[in-house]
Length: 508
Image: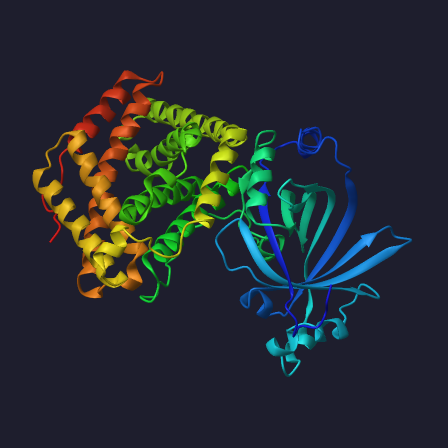
């Protein structure tokens, strides 16, 4: 590998897949027996990696990673120093510059760094002196070389081990498919074959990103929506791709955290990410080829389970605690009934979380997620002749404003026609979500005079109708439980009282 940074660096192109499992050893054995890998020679290594950064984490902020990797046995160790730069995409498919060199020992080599773009990043060598170990990854790697009929060569690497940062530990169980030659489509082709044997979830977080999070005791925290900085110079397909990529990344990041985190917000943010992705598909429908959008039918069972889990979480954490005093009213017997109901909901939520994790381990789920990732990666960046975007012949700013105004008008009409029945209110709530998510996605392209006001109104509508819906859902959950009839009637009465649509809500 060339070390002269003036020459093009080695470009690492890889597809990263998390493996949701409680039994990594069994998964490894199943993967090794898969039709894709069973007849291929496996190479096994134990890898110990120390990552370096400054106390201010200058490398992390610059999207860089610097590590020393120890390979081999204690009696015959080898050391490799690696600098990686880039990797700003939300996709599980990453492309980064990589400079790698063999070094004499486990300490950082300034000479090896000098043969990389380091001097452009740190011309005065001030950060170089401040570099210190910040976390460690230690794992066993089993790898196979897969040569395709299309001439591609891909390294399939299974990593099982852990990340260590001070007192904290986090497991590593993932696949990295690295393209050694050929086109990136070869990675997805192999990933789909793997997904027929083991469950996978696309992951857009490198080991170094997870290591930084662990060092801050922030592993598996909920991933929330990010506000994109969209330039008016972008084409409409480019805007669509960035919005869809970010929403889907929110969905998959929270799926990856689901089985390792007890945070109820992880479930909520996974569902938010999926709703934002679907809303973005509707928002950009005029620019997308409808027949090219992959099917997500295989995700339906998982999405249903997540919805049921969220209903349980909202009922036991948000809705019912506000009603406890009104029901018990100092009555000891009622207090006991309430406590038994709350305990039953807690146990139900714990069971449903396990069901969600099992649903995530269904191979067809990973196959569907991979299809969406590949579709997002291959979306055209320019509007094809004859597309609606071409016919409109307008800037993305004007396009964004028109779409949001149209959504605002639809919501206004639905609110004007709304009654107190569930279907009518559901339509208003869905349109309020679509307006809110649309504004958030296109925020930097929209005029601020009206959109902030419309966003607040949509949020207020969604919240008000959602709170009434949450009470009805809690009442329905309790009605299916074996609880005191008086509690069921109490909840039914509260539900009816909250049914009416607030009259002061409007969209102007």
